[in-house]
Length: 308
Image (cartoon, rainbow, N blue to C red; front, side, top):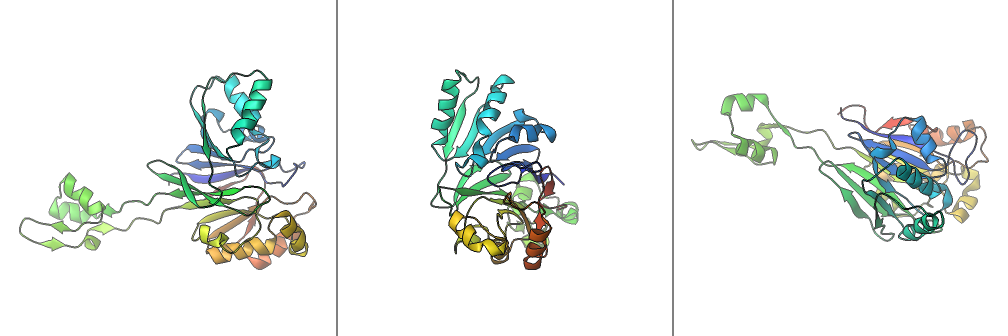
């Protein structure tokens, strides 16, 4: 199976701890690397996990709180020092351009490469990137400042033609392409063979969603409906529900409700408040609400699906 995985580079909340860095993740899709958020220390975590910084061409920043982007200027500076010339695409609040340019100007840094900025839509779900195999969507969240989450969605596979069909009817290239696109086969003698009898159904396409800082709101599950693997930021236990609401974060109950209503297949959670030194209690509470949930640790890798 071609790789589709996410590596947790940082899973703490507002400030790093001795065991957890601030928010950042690296998505590996068919060996193409996509960075989500870039908290302080991200480039050190990339090095620890032996990722090549030069292979990162697209960076997605959910919002402009420091624990989600303070590592960005350091990463950009390192890429420049390493001699990068390829364009770098940053998807973020449009104010990120001013923030980076001020820092680059004051340090008298002239980049050897171009940064292409893509402003996020904080009102509606939107396709922000695609290639032949992947689509990336942003979707709005409800936080204290404009914030988006991101969905990485594999494009659907075309079905394969049954071997016995090739052997029996010897379709040409044009007919093969037509069949894979869902058309029936018409033979010269007038025989009509339905598409369902010609092909092997393809495996379901895979999807991964990153849900950044937000409070739970009614429309949130709709944005994430049917996602295969969901990472949701869960900062507090249930007893601090009011504090979570005030800070526009989610509790264990919120993330489990989100996963259930969105009908996601697998839930992983992070962005824990630094007040929790021992994760046992929060883990037990979460598992009582969503038995298949996993609390992440820095430097762990999760595959969206082990096999197709």
